[in-house]
Length: 221
Length: 221
DNA sequence: GCAAATTAATGATTTATTCAAG
DNA sequence: CTTGAATAAATCATTAATTTGC
Image 1 (cartoon, chains in turn green, blue, red, brown):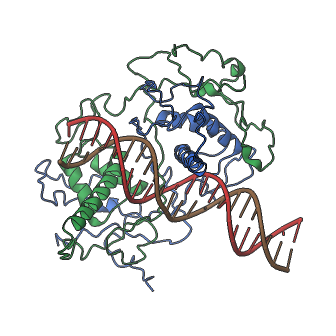
Image 2 (spheres, each protein chain N blue to C red):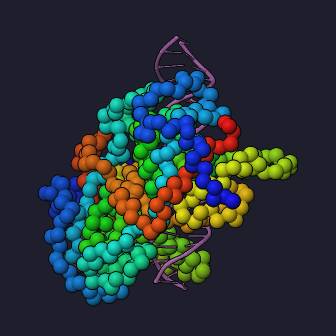
């Protein structure tokens, strides 16, 4: 019942103009305020550009990569990143060094380095730091609550010399932050979407699914 | 107080090499396996590649763009995205159409379209949907708590015709999700880091912060 | 009428929570 | 159970509205 293709209906209006012209100044001035609480401000929008068959969850791993590292080919189906020992070692080293949330530049460089030891992406590095930080924190919290007494200098292992700052700009600004973790630092990440590195449309199926996003919601008709 | 700059101290070592070469392969081969669980597995890791002064929050907008849209020149300094009316209109249209968290492909296409009406990046689209969804949700919650009674058919406005799927694959899978918002869908985002599109090092201040990440933690020396 | 100060919106990050692969 | 991946919630930070003083 729901499989009735409707992409033929709402198409008639914008059939022409396959690639809409930018710089269009065609909408009404629309009193600089009042912020369009109604709707339909830019009705002339080429929806056809959005209809796209999604091409499935095909991602890294469509064909086995170079696999130059010493890792066994863990991800044949290519699901999630399986870090090698070297990668983990480097990441932990960086973490111990004080890096908590690397910015895009750092992530790029780390990824570049780690990719020598196995397949990896920037998001893996990002997630690794996120998760490691969070889990290290909750582990610490568990410990502090679990055995509440005996506060024998917590985190006394490596805390002496490396109080460096890898906090982008604001240069650590002391504050002492004796917990080695200050919430919220506002760092201006500057990451962006790269969106499927290539245009590899070779997918398993669909040739013309053409499922469109929405048929111009039932109001203007 | 506290403003004592330390960036001058640890600088002496890597003074040279202002623009690192990230395809660098200068680190030793580093025994391809062994990788024990103790630590310091990969001690010979080229740290120089990571030291980078962050270059401040300077991003899109170093020079005013074409500004072909009908929007007043809102971002001269170019800090954060300032959406035009057209962009907002399209985004709201998509949102009303049912799109909640577009995946990378959709984000790319949306960005491509919206870039015709003003400068925009993929992350802006991503953030917009995140924020809009969250704030719409909390607004709704506020309302439901504020005037608690009168449960007359919740969300009965648009629910008849646009049950389209913009949910990547899993094709809506009915479930009815009458709240138009089902938590957790596990969708495989596939976004990636793009990492500062250019090498624009022009920042507002600190010409030579050069604060490095960490001085090879005090263990091997 | 205009510009500085204040407030309201909202873009951008970070943290907490949760799901699912192995 | 461990942990990579993804999303939701909290919150910081900047810009536009709005107000206020002249």
